[in-house]
Image 1 (cartoon, rainbow, N blue to C red):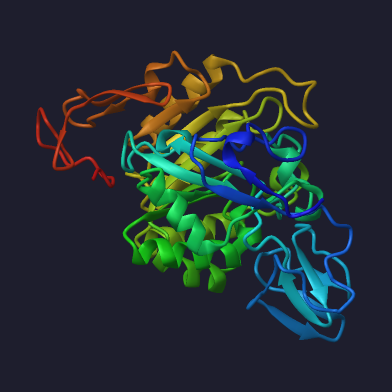
Image 2 (cartoon, one colour):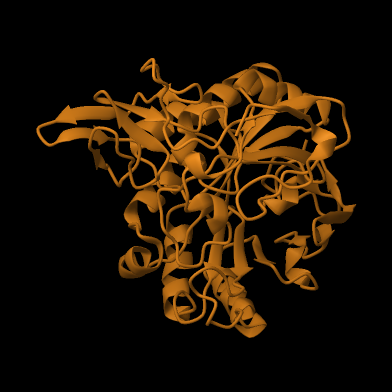
Length: 383
């Protein structure tokens, strides 16, 4: 595919199997990258949409990527498990730099973030690839493929900030696929945004090693981390990962002062064990996350689990009760549009402080981050 310049009005969808990138009605243009089988020119120069990683080491077995707990040893010319990092002449490169496959302007509530700049808009982007392999992935068309396989925009970090500003977004969200695998693009974009007063949001499974995460956190203002279960065996069989690194990510984000919210997708026959949910909620409470919003999300048949039913609302409500009884203060139910469990309720007086319907804010009864009725502080970033 050529790098043809196209007006954004021409785009309603962009990407493999219909990954959305909505046109917003301006005259600006994006360059559309080619879909090439080889990432290198005959001149042997590195492909334009790439950047060398800081996080790899040379070992006796070859080059090892140290960005995430997979720690792939990558042979010359091969990709890591994430399909977005390659070994080129003994160095590891990200091949999704400035090369997103999906761009949208979303309500911040969609991330989901309920205690962070409510009713604001977030400029949201993704690059193909993921370092997990979830059987239930809802964005498998982009997360389980390589940037080589998607139709992509050319959008370098400076332009990400400019676009966010143009669309009056208060934040930029790195989302949809797994932002850890396009780490270099995230950190460069977030630095520029931060310098110019736009906040940065990480929507992630949190599968990252300590050093890269700590280097990133100064530029990240909020994160929603998908805590997929509280059982290492299930993490391995359902998601292709391990539990402990994700728990470590939660602790580091809290230590580093990043506003944090957690999502737990309840998958029938996999993560709907109420005893396991209780252990998870007790761990969160015992580790200081009682004020951290927890979103229980309803599973819908997807990807490799289309034979399963959707999560019953009864199980979601039971999970919410377990979390409440464990001492967690802000529990939400997602993917059930009619649920009252989308509202933020003051833990002291029980009045609604933020009322929601879907991604809309119907009313906000907060004054300087406090309940309007009883002045209880409601943790969050409200302005």
